[in-house]
Length: 121
Image (cartoon, rainbow, N blue to C red; front, side, top):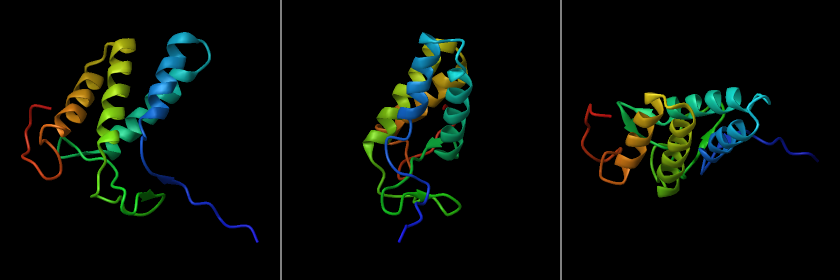
């Protein structure tokens, strides 16, 4: 019997957009940049709550069409999001990517789901 595989976001979600930004820099005519921008924008919207980086929690992950698991967040999420944002900023120089980097970086310093809120990011 075949089981149905459910799409879900789990961990290290920013690795895909970062790889696409790197590919776009290497092969600019291949359409990688559109995929990079779209996947990063989706991830940024999904992981930003009240201007705070709030990654997918690993308790129940984020199954397609269901609620995102809010807790049991992993540092790998903030680290890979920061890396992807810096890669995008280096390639495109757009402020939105620097702001995404700052949110992900601030997660390590208490600007997270359990910490204080700020409007500086």
